[in-house]
Length: 464
Image 1 (cartoon, rainbow, N blue to C red):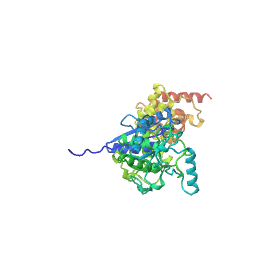
Image 2 (spheres, rainbow, N blue to C red; image 1 turned 120 degrees about the horizontal axis):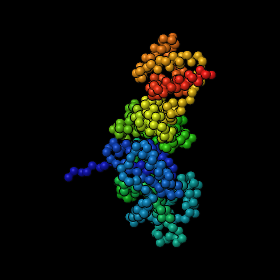
Image 3 (cartoon, rainbow, N blue to C red; image 1 turned 90 degrees about the vertical axis):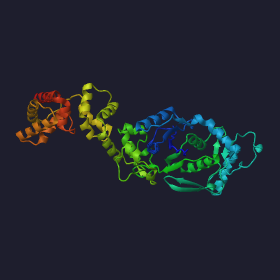
Image 4 (cartoon, helix red, strand yellow; image 1 turned 45 degrees about the vertical axis):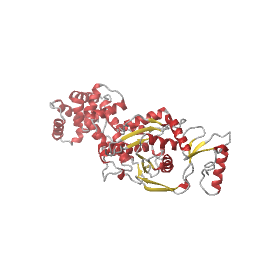
């Protein structure tokens, strides 16, 4: 019987201490694409061990943000805190195998170690005081921690998918705490145990985790477990080249949704922040799944360019299904009458051509949702509008092509440029100067409504 082929399993493991930020969304996207490209699994783990800061609201925001982006996961989410007993049990197994030990140092002793290291010009770290001591010597009034018995010399080498070979001297790493004195496991231990138990084969994450990875490698080796392949990607920078922070604007995924961005535009933008496929800028999610490879992950930090994001969003709005855009729009503006809803749907082709965000779409769509308000007409335009009304009243084939022919013929007949007819007509129909084409709007409003608005405007202005 042949050897079974390993299924690729990736994961996204956010801490629910805040909302799903843009950097976390990119990490989720890359891991999701890697799994989907290879026909593997993408799993979700909520690292909620920080009980003071973890909130149900943040967990809900993570779920909603991932669903909005279209990043579905393949199994029930794992909640790290619920597995604490498993983590502690395995730490005790390391003690039994001689790969970890109980440390009974007091807070005062640890502080003295740090001071001594600083005085010697070294980075503060634990000096291995209880590494080889017998627990029989332990003071009775101190609850111990469990520390990893890390290698004292040599190097720990990481063959990183993105960064290449990265090495750290083991002398720089101390015997880290695996279980605290209150009996709770540390983040380092929990991550390794969970990744192992979930069968994670590949981990893509920010390069701010690189130091953590070296420590986690030592835990893997202490257990004798196979390690995932790691890839550490540079963090996202703002337009000014500095690390992306709150001063660069809203960072939560829900904020980008509120600013009127479509999820496919966000995914496309995030994909290009650290990954490339030739010179392609517009990449659909289907293409991304087909093309995604860790070979194309970059080592250099990328800048989030909001103008590029808006241009991408404009592209996806123009490509979007009109019914879907209408539903997105109604989420923003609320319910409208059936008549206005039909107008919006009929006019969506023109509206979306002029919108880079859903908020811009909302603003321009008011031509079809606002109640009719009779505008003031310049006296010089009243005669032109009266002739326009006469021409429109006899149009039988109320189509854009027929309306354009009729109104351009009118312009020739009365010796005016077409703009002299279109602009006052636009003002009467919508009260705005910038709109979709006048012929499109006439079709959306229909003959009866268009003629009625012209008559009302002319009657009001004729009486002034």
